[in-house]
Length: 120
Length: 113
Image 1 (tube, chains in turn red, yellow):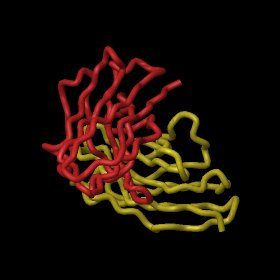
Image 2 (image 1 turned 180 degrees about the vertical axis):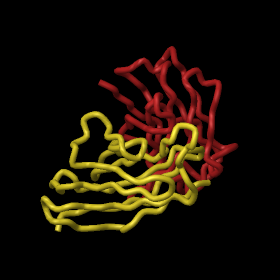
Image 3 (image 1 turned 90 degrees about the vertical axis):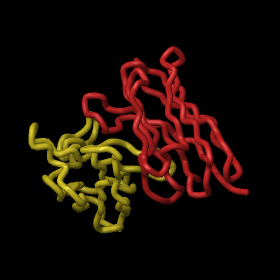
Image 4 (image 1 turned 60 degrees about the horizontal axis):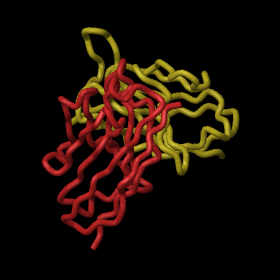
């Protein structure tokens, strides 16, 4: 069974940093591209970033470019999102998600999400 | 960026009746070299992450009931629930994966009348 379990969210002050993690199991993690998608509670879905299977290629939404860094450790089956220079508008649930691989850009599995709250 | 819009914002349908959700992209998501529309549909039930329903605009994901069907091409797409069930209450999102940044529609909330 595919499982994606996020952690690392919490309350952080504006300008602060967090490192979100996503532990993957139930599939060959190193073979799949991965995404981060965020959602302000009660609002819609916003794609944040994507990383290819070996970590050599990354893409970001303009709103987070230069502040967020996606990475992965295939030996640990773990996806990361380093979030720096946080702003109030970054407050959201952050979902780790698996790319459908044969259909690049389609997400076939999602984690339960981790909440990041940016507030003083 | 490709902007996705959806209509209506919400709808209430009686059990067993048809529900239709529309999605429009600001530019075509039809890739001419393979004649495929890079458009997916998800739904999200309260307190849960989204679930993939349809990709390539009309291909149902494995395990998705056949009452869900997608149609359309180019910039205009539709998701139809042929006979609404209680478990279909959710917010429905379309998404284009033609190009990054991948973008989602704002969502359509489906309720029981």
